[in-house]
Length: 417
Image 1 (spheres, rainbow, N blue to C red):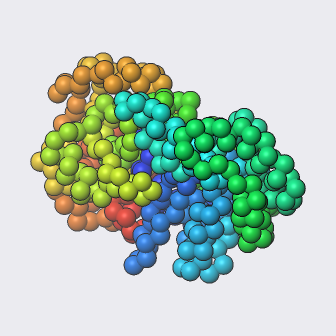
Image 2 (cartoon, one colour):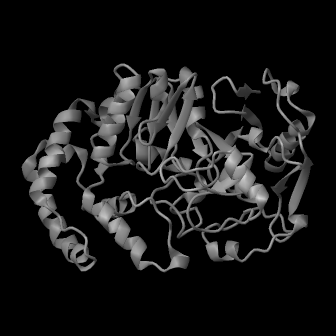
Image 3 (tube, helix red, strand yellow):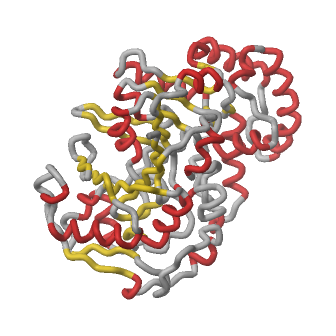
């Protein structure tokens, strides 16, 4: 059965490790959305791999495919591909010819977008040009990978783009578009990677009867249409975007990943956020620093209300919980079970102003005693009793089984139930 690994929170749930762990049983690993604003860190033995675009299945030598829903920064991809090539011989990475590119002017526009927003409304983007690149895609102005076959095609597109954007760039003291330099850079990039570019139809034909693992970027609560708008990413992160972003019309089962607590990078509502020394402890113990942004993540208790919502919009059939080991030495652990003492069947996370106005109190949280150090990872039954109660409570609340429990960054620190 094909599977999709989807983050259920605001990203950073540990998808990279789990994709690496599961990919052993799959023929192809596919990334279907996002850009290099997503970071996956995987530790295998003494090697640490930091990936932004390439699916972590590459570490196991699996064939990896970046689908048309991805936006690609040529310089970043080439550098990342080179870095992974130094650790893995002949990495099998292919790019959909229909991918839209992120160019320098997209990054300038990203900075402008952040500058014109007031402090309250700032999104807190990575300023890597992802949002403007998706805007161009919707506005039918994208330069695609397949365009790079022809300098003339690139030049003609850039002439129109320059007319459109130069007045904006100039008014904010950003560099105007240099057509000759851009064409030169793109043609060099194409010569370097053209053997990796492949038509969607060829990929679908090759893997028609093979097992596919889909890797999501960011998290469901950052989805452009279903997340805490406007504090969201620029693509659809939910599992229903797989068919659109990958071009594979196949059945799959969704594995939803969540941390035993919650984190968020950037601005936006965060109902269970902690502002005390417990939040500081979780951030330090959990190494909660953005792989891409290098910003310290906001930390809070696990929010089961938002998690239930994410499970529903992603049609999650099984769960994976990560990083419960970060909470080992706390005197007590909490989970948010309601908002303002109301247990919701569904919450509209698009209405971020409503979420920001919540005032949670002790009755909105379930409290669990500490489970202490976890000394035996052989199976679920050997886990501390209090941790097992914590896990079973979450399962009962969501009515979905937790099949995978990750208790550390190494592959070996994983329990399958």
